[in-house]
Image (cartoon, rainbow over all chains, first blue to last red; front, side):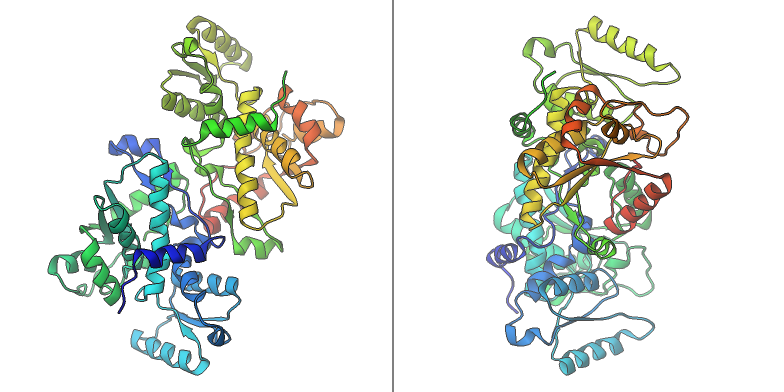
Length: 264
Length: 264
């Protein structure tokens, strides 16, 4: 697999120009005072459809060749990825089929997905293990660096939520290329800190079964193949957070930052 | 009184450069579908301290001459204006005294405010009836026009919440100068639609006593003198909304737009 480079992310940013939202970089004096330093927040919850997923989906779908466009796209997701794919496809004039899990076992849904994609001649849009998706999510990192510079901030560390690892793979590629002294850490739910543990083990490990978390958007069983290939080289480490910490952060976000954020 | 012109608002934008937040312009496909047209949202709730008030306060305070700076600033407000003034003063290195109303009658607080300002040699920062405040709030309109153009949107109408009328006076000055075919309407709580009724009467009228509204930030008794002088020339009319409509809009903002907004 080819790893996306800075140039791919810059190309994605040009494709996204005029589509979706350049999310702002927010700063709260209350939060700065509490932490004892400057904290800058990139609220991707304000992105079209409420998450960063629109970035990768748009970058992927906008590159589907003409002869494949009438087949539309297909995606498997119960959440943010589905919404991002649907909105990007609509904006680009392609049909989208989304497979939502109900009680079916994961393997059956995956098989259905592959079959449907073949039968419909549709392009499968994966949630993270795709260089175009990673490059699209990386546009968030380009914006971040530009906005942090405009705010006169030197970035000591960047913390990014992590499920399959697509967003952090894109952002950390940008950071390594353009701000090498900035640390990058993934943040995962306790019990689902597969990327943190994989970084320590030097290879992809799987979460123990039976763990629960309110962060429904981040419950991937193991790091993506492509994304871990990137993240093992770009990340400084990982953090795991408890449901209690997540709830407290959500309340702070609503009361002080005025943002309604989901747990993940 | 001199009315602020477009040039004053552009000068305010240059002063604010690098301070506060350039709030994004958001668009929700869900909202567009529901309304049957494009709705662009300028979420000033993401501005530093959670409201547009930082814009005007920063523009005012940054122009205080050197010899008056050590006297600091003084403001009368229980809410957003107080927070905007305090944050702007802090960022500019001036001391700020804020008078908060408790049970004291308004007239007593106003007298206290004037006396305190004199005694402390402080600069009084009014919430809306000041050309520098109006010019600062107008920077929101400059951003809006630039962002709407980037989004490929022709603005048919701009709706702005209205208490004393500072924000809409600034924004409508920009719209009249740069986008003359766009209508501008003030939006006020039912029973506190003094600006709407003043526009119809052709002169400043006062609200009937006894009305109540959950929009605590918009309960001014009558339009500002300076702001109405502007708004009578720039506005196309006004709308009044019920508490029920406000609650429904707040729920929509939280669920779909991911923004925690106050009633006003």
